[in-house]
Structure formats: C-alpha cells, structure tokens
Image (cartoon, rainbow over all chains, first blue to last red; front, side, top):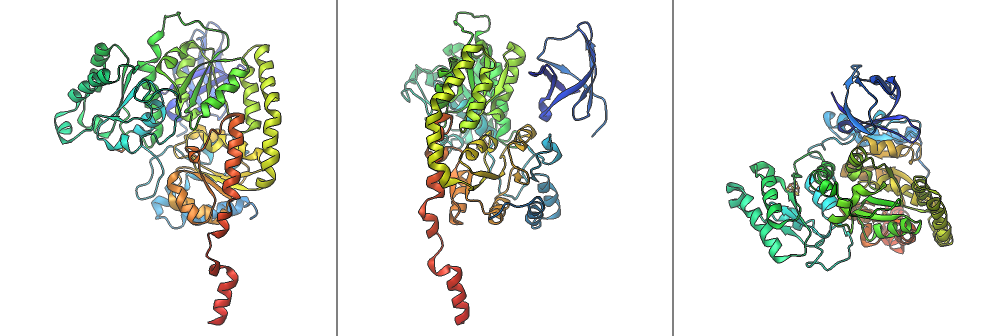
Length: 73
Length: 492
Ligand code: SF4
C-alpha cells in the first residue's frame, strides 16, 4: 500500500508520485472522476494500475494510499 | 576523435565490465547505459540509488554530509553542531564555498565548525548531557545566533542518544529553534538520504513556525529560491535576474539563507527549484500543505536561462512576463559577446561529466551554448527521476554512468578521449596526470558564480582557460613522442 502524492499538472492531467520509488508518472485514466465520487482503478502511462478507495473529489495536491492492482514485480 | 556509435559505446561498456567478478559485473552492468532519447523512462535503461559495491572506489558521501554539508550548513545565522566525533565536521568544514554576507562568529557562522567532540567517555555514558551543555554555552558565547541544529554523526544513532528530548529542552531554555537532525552517516546509500532527512527536519521543526501569523506583508510576486547553495555566489547571480523581472525573492534555500527566510517560505506564491535532488521533498510538502506550486528551473547558459525565465513568468501576470523579456533583452549583447569570443575557441570540444545533484544535466545547456558537446554524464547519488530528466538533455548514444567507480571512469576516459572532464577533487589529479584538462565542478574549482548571465561569462572563461591551457602540450615527455620511440626501436 504505497502512499501516493497526487497533483494536477499544467495540462490538468493527474500526476502520480510515489516518493519511495521515485516514480513520477501521468495517469492515463481514472475510473471514477466526478465531484461526488473519485477513485477506483487508475492506469498510469507506463501501464501499471493502482486502486484507490472511492471518495468525494479531493482537493489536489494530496497524499493518498493506493493498492497496486497488477502484480508486475 | 569521432563520436562513438551506439554499438561502439555498448561494446565499450562490455569491455570495461569484463574485469569484474561475475556478481559485481551483473550489478555494475545495471548502472551503465547508452543514452537513448526515445526512452521516456530511465528505469528501462539504468538503475540508480543503490548501495555501492564493497571493494570499488565510489565517490559518494554520507547522510551527514548531505544534511550538514548541503542543506543545513549554509543557513548562515544558525549554529550547526556536528554532534559526535570531531573529524566529520572538521574535515568537511567550509569546503563547499557557500558564500554569505555577515560577520563570521558574530551574527553568521557558516565557515565555523561547532562540534561536541565525542570521546570514549561520551560513547560509553551517552552524550546528551554534553549536548545540553553545548546549547547553553553557545547561547552565552554567540548570543546573536538565531537557532541551533544538531547534525548527528554515526555514533549518535548507535548509542541511542535522545537528541530530540535535549532539543526540546534547549528550545525552552534559549527560546530559539533547536532542531535535531537524525542524519547519521550510516543511513541510506549516499548523501541523498541525508538531503531527505534534512528536508523532513525542516518540515517538522521549522516550516510551521509562522503558521497562522499574517504579520508578514506579502505581495503577489513573492517567490522562494530553493536548492541554490550560493556556491561561489551562484544564488546572488540568480536572484538579481528574478528581481529585475519584477519578482520578490523572499527566501533563499539555503545559500546565504537565514532561518527567518525559511520560516517565511510558506507565504510565497511560487517555489523555484534549482537543485531538484536535494530539495524536491520540501517543495512537494509545501505544495500539498500550503498549495504552493513549484517549478524546476535552470540558470546555466543563456538558452536555458531564457527558457527558465519565460517558464517562471508564465506563472504570473503580464508585468512579469514583460519583465522576463526585458531581462533577456537587456543581457543579450553581453552574453552574445561571450559566445562570440569563446565559441570559436571551444567549438566541437567534447566533455565528460560526473557530478552530483543537478549538475550532470543542468550544465549541458551551458556547454552547448559554447558549441561544446557533453558525451558522457552521471550522478553520484541521483535517483531514477534524475535520469528521467537527463535522457532528453543528452545526445543519442552518449554514455550514462551511475555511481561510477574509479576504474570505470578511467577506462571510459581512455577510450572516449574527451577534451574536458568535469568532476570532483578526488578525480582531478588522476585525470590531470593522464593529460586531460579538468574542472572541479562541485565548487567550480574555486571560481564562480556559474549561474545567471554573469555566471555564464565566468563559466566560459574558465572552460577556455582550462582546455586551451598550453600546459597540456607539455604533459608528455619530449622523448616519449611516437616518432622517437620508433627511432629507439629501430636502433635496437
Ligand atoms: S559516515 Fe559517519 S563517521 Fe563518516 S563522515 Fe559520515 S557521519 Fe561521520
């Protein structure tokens, strides 16, 4: 369950940052992306997937806990 | 010598790896790569931020060096106690040339060495009492200091001293910040973790000091310069440009910086990061907690400076945007004269770098402005995100080497035959004896500043006087020329 720091970049895309891994990646898709419900499965540009418990749209930037979905390594 | 092709560079890496035993070869292979601009992520080609192999010559420092030497040390109005035996502080004292204004020993303390000077007794019975006494003594002897940081050396973590408790008591006693930093040298694989620990200490012990206090009048143009250590005056040469374009620099982290500036940083509108490696942690923290955006910039060489000034200005209104254009225009004649003078003398020269922090990628643009080419670069303690940012800056098929060993570096140089090497003091004399021009790029070989337009002129001059120095023609003994050795062979 890595802590992930999420922020919006200048194009309004979600940027994923995992401090422990120096992983900085743009999110390609977010399963739920509305004001009432945000989260679910998030797919990154490098193909890896993470899962966030759905919550009301948070105020970015924010640090949240995520689960890795694929067992890539 | 012509540039190496991709195949030749790959072959070179294999050749250099040959000498290692199986296990070491496997490990080192992951740290050496041929640059490929088509890759977006560096983890596909290079591994970094791993423990160095025992037995090889590494150039890294320790976590204490990262915290005391880099992040905390330059905060000039605080006293930084090197807590533990005397050597760690004394041998690294004033080595980085973080310039500052003030009267040393009265209201600034940058080049002094404060240490608890541990002896056997302190290791056996603990050093907390001694530390408390030092805090009291400092307050008596140097009343104008603005705070104390406790920089732990290795033994502190080993004997389990409670420096946090001492710091809290000290803080009550002297009524100034006393910051314990757990940067014992054995933590992590390099100085990089020391930077992180130092950032965390600032976050936990300093940054919140003025939360809820709005007495500091702010403007819409407030920025903080983060990760500029004022080596040879770098931060000053940067600050003038920012101020000229209409911004107000509220804080300098940490070259020529003060603790008051650091406490005021949460009030700024934008954080400007020069050394990403050592201070991105605190910028990310401020982004989350105070909603202050941050951007990276690069003040080496006119191309990158103009790019950076425009990028910084894009976060502000039209007056600042116009200001940026005004600054660029104002210095144009000046930097063009520098290029006109030195480019013909430096055109086509090839450079290999091996440094730390931001430089392995940031200085590339400055060399390119002078018509030079960087053919190899590497970080002492970089992470993957540093290499991500490097791939695009470097040409295709150039060499990337992470935590390079003394042996590998020498072999690469023998084969690539660069016209200039930029690295540290430990590498300097090896390469000079091999007859390769060398600049010590950690503290600018006692020159500087290199940031900003003013710095670029000095940078160009220094590179020229190193590369085109007549001494390099004298390195080889006259009887060792190829022709004469042929003659000797013929005579024998
Ligand atoms: S590794 Fe430990 S003993 Fe060596 S300089 Fe660093 S803190 Fe001091």
